[in-house]
Amino acid sequence: MMRVDRSFLVMGLVFALLLAAPFVLPLIGQAYLLNLLIKAMLLAIAAISLDLLIGQGGMLSLGHAAFVAIGAYAAAIGLDSGIENILVLLLIALAVSGLYALVTGALALRTSGIYFLMITLAFGQMTYFTLTSLAPYGGDDGLTLWSLATLFGSDVVQSGGHLYIVILLTLLVTWWGVHRLSNSRFGRVLRAARDNPERTEIIGFSVFRYRLTAYVIAGMIAAVAGLLTVQQAEFVSPALATWQRSGDLLVVVVLGGLGTRNGALFGAFFLVIVEEVLGSFMHEWRLLYGPLLVLMALYARGGLSHLLLPAPKVSDPAKSGAAKTGAHLVNTEQAT
Amino acid sequence: MSVLEIRGLNKHFGAVHVSRDISLSVPEGQCHALIGPNGAGKTTLIHQISGVLRPDAGEIVLAGRNITASAIWQRAQAGLGRTFQLTSILPSFSVLENVALGAQAKDGSSFRFFRPAARERTLNDTAMTTLERLNMAERAHVPAADLSHGERRLLELAIALAGAPRFLLLDEPMAGLGRVESAMLTDILADLRRSIPMLLVEHDMDAIFRLADTVSVLVNGQVVAQGTPDEVRNDPAARAAYLGDSKT
Ligand SMILES: Nc1ncnc2c1ncn2[C@@H]1O[C@H](COP(=O)(O)OP(=O)(O)OP(=O)(O)O)[C@@H](O)[C@H]1O
Ligand SMILES: [Mg+2]
View 1 (cartoon, each protein chain N blue to C red):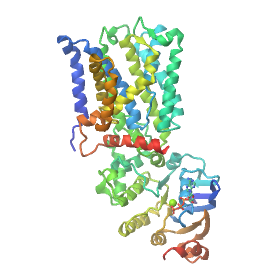
View 2: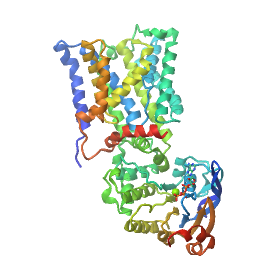
View 3: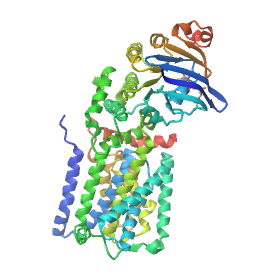
View 4: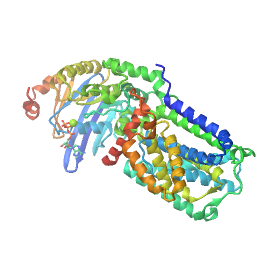
């Protein structure tokens, strides 16, 4: 059966547009928009990783921003102690976030549903308060970085170089990697455990181990977004780890469409654009933002991805599972 | 040598003693039926064997290996397949993917992150062969949520079979099936039991008398009679406790 996967076409189109942006926008005098796109791409990377947890794994986390912050602080502290090579900083960020995910995940995954949400929220808050107490690194105020990471001395990974392209490539690799993972054996077990954990266990899979692995992978991806955030912002602060940030990620994922290939991507761009547009003509833009979310929740079930690309009748397992995810989460919450 | 051996199993739910010193053993190539009135503790026994519940005392040995303390998934990996009294499938997966997941459990590691599972020939072939065996091949690409009740029961069995189990635990597989479907499932199980020994909980007496080599009658958590179907049919205790008040 020959069927071109539409999500690939859409991603291809988005990628092409994003690739063209740094060449086209300066020509029409809108170069400042590139910063907005970078913001959206970084948000999308973190959101894709959160969707792996929620959409594929049914693990409703409200502490995911902690991983972004950990990645950012790992890079910042590394830079502060004289490590400049971005690949070394990347390894450090991955190691620290992976270890943190392993420990907190092993504890949090003893629960599910609403209790999992509570525990991840608690770990997120712990991270936040730990960062505020890091006096040598600015405490509450955060830390401004005077030198940024380089790639073997080259500034391609900085704003003056090709940071935009580096972030775009990272987004593409993340999107593609998570897409492959969702369809792999591992992803299949993860989705099965989301739909029916008891059955999955009886078939012969340790639900805990699969979920924990997904949790670690998602945490490490979010940490990469954190590392790149440092390169962009040249600044880190505990604000990265606030639960509002985790909430934003959750909104992005749900708004975009849980467990859909492009949902997190759409959601991230939507949020950043809405923030910018609403914010440009009113200071209290969040007053409109709230009702907008309510409307989306009521009328755009399945998220933006569903509005823009209504699901075909013949269902793809990865997608058809997603439609049920919302209901499943509610069930888990009620059952546990 | 018996494939499944249960020794002195006891389980309480609070003050209720739901399993009282249950011992039974099922040798290779045999079907052991477990019958008894509602609430006798049949499902509770199946839960303990599959690991969903832990017994208070006693031992469970599968193919010579003590699995009393093993996790659910470890028992499955050791060769235990089971179906549920209330059908339990993956409704958002296609029928084929449900069964392929069963095959995947016994085909090497599933910590594989890159290759699309849906395109793995060995998994799909195993799943398809299993579905053919249950006359469900033409439903392979239907979402499992769209199956009829009877088809779901068969799918559950297919998921278990795709994992090539050493032993099957079947909790009322005929429940809710029509006469034709029941007869078909009975035929299928009759074919299977010589290659895969099974513990069968069932209310359908016709099926029991056709399939079972040994029958245990469970009443209030206790095995009150055990023997061949004919012995049990003529056992006064069994008749009084159970067979007497059924319609046959
Ligand atoms: N989790 C539980 N907690 C407390 N009591 C329970 C629990 N599960 C079952 N019981 C009780 O234990 C007894 C045995 O239940 P079980 O489900 O094993 O019976 P059964 O023989 O499978 O019945 P049926 O033929 O209706 O399926 C019943 O009295 C039931 O109410
Ligand atoms: Mg029962």
